[in-house]
Length: 174
Image 1 (tube, rainbow, N blue to C red):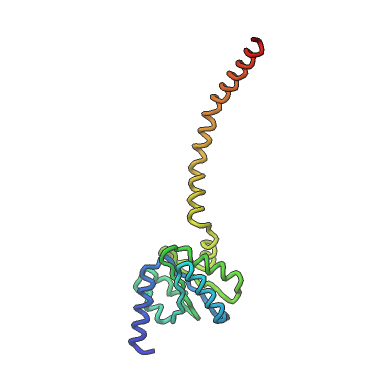
Image 2 (spheres, rainbow, N blue to C red; image 1 turned 90 degrees about the vertical axis):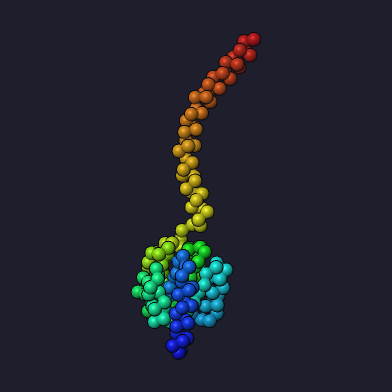
């Protein structure tokens, strides 16, 4: 690889990483070409770009960016999954796919500017989707209000019951 090709490769990787909300590094040793193709297809469906990188060039590419902390994980065969839209997309797909492939390992990554290890990536992958989390938050915020409405409605309900009993009593005596 000539100097011009290396410079072009570094700038291309830097451009890919510039708008990334998350990036996950993985070791792909022991995977077949069919496995890699399957993984790339799954990632592409989630709008995640998966690229095999040369460590020395990747270290240069991330050196002066917000993803500089990734350089610590750039050893051995490395591929990087870059997510621009949904920051959890790459972690979810890679962690799920990894469960059936013991040879595939996650090295680390960056999520919203924070360096993550393999265990932290697995924890992020187990998070429910954003919509579910928002629904849980809405339910949590609504619960005290619902309890207040129930407590305030109690005396009115009791009064209605007493009035109904008085009406029945008057109907029987009349």
